[in-house]
Image 1 (tube, one colour):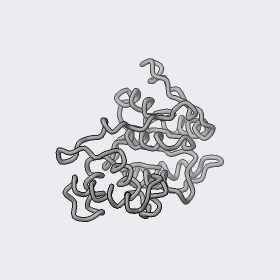
Image 2 (cartoon, rainbow, N blue to C red):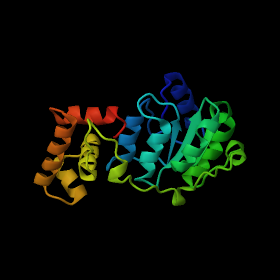
Image 3 (tube, rainbow, N blue to C red):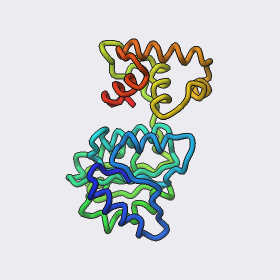
Image 4 (cartoon, helix red, strand yellow):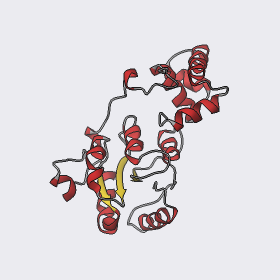
Length: 218
């Protein structure tokens, strides 16, 4: 469960915990924390993640898009206190299984979670009226962004390998684990790291990660 409002987070977590066959593995106010947990190589993964669209550190749609690029085994259910029309098309394009208004959460969330656990989408009246169809998880995989889609940093564009290296570091991987993930040697990883830090004008690796996260690139 991910929601930047602590009171809403507490209430929704309690609501989900009371649902039949549901166990809340974790909850957080930060999208970056949810991203780290969902992409971790170890630990329990949720069958479904419930995400508020308006988070403080990263938009809920972008959080779901980044997860869907790497995982098909987590259902993604969005919730919003606003009119869903402003998010529906983006939510479907990001690979989410549905989007629910918070004032309908008690009646619709149990079905949405059950369907998402099975990899199925829940189509809503708001989506149907706009000609939008939420995808099942099996058809929701998204391509990785090409290097040309990367946002320039300090006037320089990080390469795909540099971004991959920084992403792995940001999610707790050691240099040896990054090397294994990329299929290169440790010295090559250090080269990617140094070039990325130089482009970011960062003196330390944590500072580089902080700068990239602040620009929404991690």
